[in-house]
Length: 319
Image 1 (cartoon, rainbow, N blue to C red):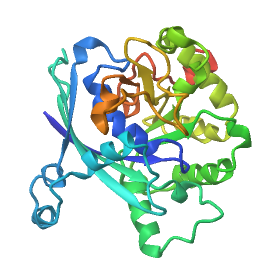
Image 2: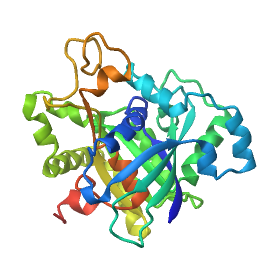
Image 3: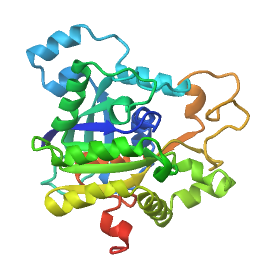
Image 4: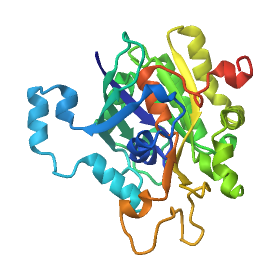
């Protein structure tokens, strides 16, 4: 059985939306998620043509595609240090999700997914950013309203003092009231989870892998962002709408050593790598991305994992 669905990533500039995407396939490949092992998901990047199922418009588009896919380019940029999505731009990425071990014969085992990665300036315009063009706003609105699921990416920071909070609050309010909104699944992903464990050394990964620790982190983050209550109210008004909250770590942890993957000997935000190697290979041997598959699998499968929490769990009503 095949399901085709669209997901839109939303969040402020620098929150980690593109990093989440760039580490997504590796996270699934390394089974660094909280879903049961018997699910056995596999995720492969595909072309727009495959997602669109060979429509004439898609065929014309594919002729113009480069030999290096947009997703491979994104992964390369992430390995090289990353770069924010250009202001008021939206990039589409396409994937095939296959469940190789789903025990339920009635469940959909194949999914074709389109993920729209929108510049953070749409959600929270910076003071230096120029006003978007009408076509840019129209494209973002179409992606947002046409998405089957929306993933809101927020950095684990002092959210109550964040400059982007008022803009995101207004966007969520308008989205909740939009009559032509298609999305019934909302996933809030708090990024940079690994930064909380920089003082834990080799014990960092052990603590990060505890769902109770993740729930505590999510609970504290929700308490500092009361404007997320619009999603809580939306669940009450629309019983078929579901919100889940989780944590993600695109930089992840160092294999074998278990510490957060931040190299203190490099300037800026750099991952550990072996001297003398460059590019993706330089990072792959040490890099274990963590839980970046969680929001996408939750959005696609409508299934919670050990690290995706409902408002009831965050409020303390469920274990």
